[in-house]
Image (tube, rainbow, N blue to C red):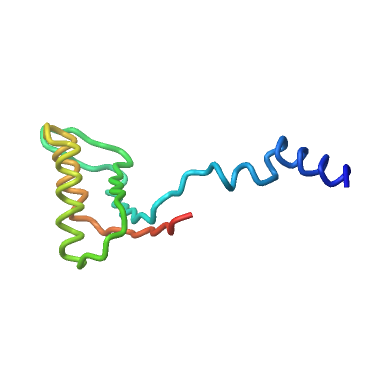
Length: 106
């Protein structure tokens, strides 16, 4: 019986035991839309961006695809509201193909 108790204590200390089950933070289900521009994105004034990528992460909430597109654009423009080269890049990236990655809650 004392052997079992020692194993339980060892498991808690090493991280392989029950401790993490009671103290972990639940991650909500999210959707990540990734939009990648061409290798060199040409912007106004001769500015070029290499490897420009836009990632919009938000919780899953059962909206239509059109609503989702509008929400993604709104979030992206809000994040880069100052405009400039980043605002212009966001505008161009939102016109590119998107890839969707969903992550379930865990």
